[in-house]
Amino acid sequence: MWRSIASNALTLLIVMLFLGGGLILWGQRSYRVAGPLQQPICVRVESGSNMTKISQRLEQEGAVSNGTLFRLGADYSDKADKLKAGSFLVPEGASMEEIVDILTRGGASTCGTEVVYRVGITRSEIVLRELDPATNRYVEKAAYVPGAEDMPAEFTEPLTQSDTRHRIALAEGVTSWQVVEELKQVSVLTGDIAELPAEGTLAPDSYEIKSGDNRAAVIARMVDAQTAILDAAWKNRVDGLPLASKEEALILASIIEKETGVPEERRQVASVFINRLKQGMRLQTDPTVIYGITKGEGVLGRGLRQSELRGETPWNTYVIDGLPPTPIANPGKASIEAALDPAETKFVFFVADGSGGHAFAETLAEHNANVAKWRQIEAEKANQ
Image 1 (spheres, one colour):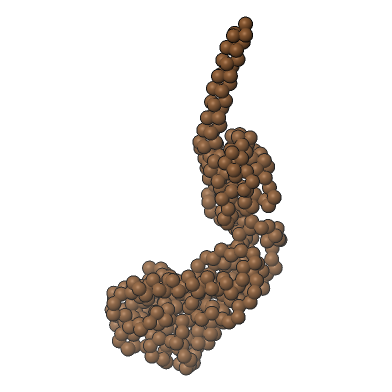
Image 2 (image 1 turned 180 degrees about the vertical axis):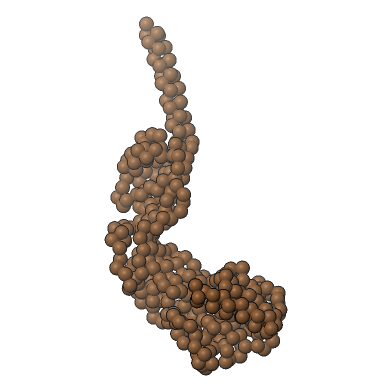
């Protein structure tokens, strides 16, 4: 009898071990295979949250098939207590293992709410937007112009949440004064900017910032970025340019930036100024006159007067030879590269063509004809 009992017990033990092993294999496979999520979602992990709450929410949202298994897998991989606060994008079909990694690896939020401080040439604004996980595109929720409009109520809660992302976006062609003035309006930044950065030394780009970041440190990031861009472009410059230094290249790039907003034209515009410099012709470009009036502090907001075109300032290229003494704005990467790799042309003139671009010419006669066409277009618009 005892031999029969022992045999049955051994058989039961073997069966239990077999079933247990199969259960473990099933669990491991379920933890690692593609999950049931049909489209991406944004998962917000609040400070102090735990894996139990997160697993329940993920199961409710259809991101995992079994919340208990998700929690056990996180615990088995020693990640159950390593949740990071923030908002994280979980892609379609993500496995439990991948989701655990996303929620515990740390780093900046990858979805959710973002406040963007846009520094523009004619106006600046603060925008509240949210990432739509399904399209991976941001949707604007509210916006306002600081100093001119009250902050909308939609901003109140996001500005108090630790996982809200903040970003400063500089438009190509803004001046250093405009950048500094707008950074003063960014409430999440701290500290003062002791002196105005040299014109042209800030790279127009998008910069992620965090609450408590120092304003001077943000400026330093912009300077470092522009230095790297200019160094690389200077290293790859074409031969025979009438530019003696990187500083002169930056000056020319700033003029190109202010003269055209059409990307395809930058190298042609650059060729006009390069050809003029080579031939000893004055650059005769309106943006340099404007900078001599405003010093980059705001927008002129009107047309130039004839007296201003003749007025003597260090920047007025109608009256000075060669380049002005400093840049007249902060040029973008494309304009810097155009200054150091211009198109090969014989153009020495250009004028607006009425379509947002310019008409280029090699001779004064051709240029005068283009000017006449432009004035006709202006007259027709005025009579509409």
